[in-house]
Length: 202
Ligand code: ZN
Image (cartoon, rainbow, N blue to C red; front, side):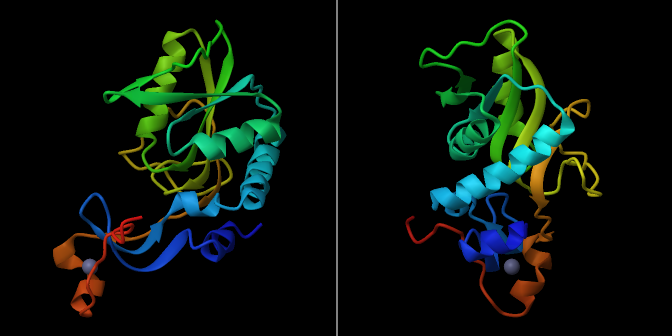
């Protein structure tokens, strides 16, 4: 499966000159939600990710996603794995599990995101699952920004990766883009102006 092509076809992988939320510039930008706009594509990607997870033999009772980013990917993955789906959400900045969702003691939970950058939100949600007695058995994402090493990839873990190293991390592809400080950006030097993705008001 050519995951990058699927992202490009869905306008989820943008090629241009972008100003990232970190303030750095990049030639590429991932607009993850766009690849899930078509439910058939969402299913295709989740099915492929589920195959990889099933092949590993990992036992999973439940998929848990941090809202909002992980909701669609998490739901589609839970469907493909035929397990329960719950989500965590921020209430006044603090990650919580609400809405009557329960986690039983020893329940094997796979955390799922649409994209893993450093894995911060996934791990915040994971700590809530653990407080409730759940066991985090792995992490999954459709796309990996390349800061954390996933299964079946040579991309090494960077120091800012927040995912634990003792559980598997599954993703379909690594999207490792070069990022530049604004004063060292070759695209700026070429005279173009960086735009903030989503700045058209959507
Ligand atoms: Zn630039």
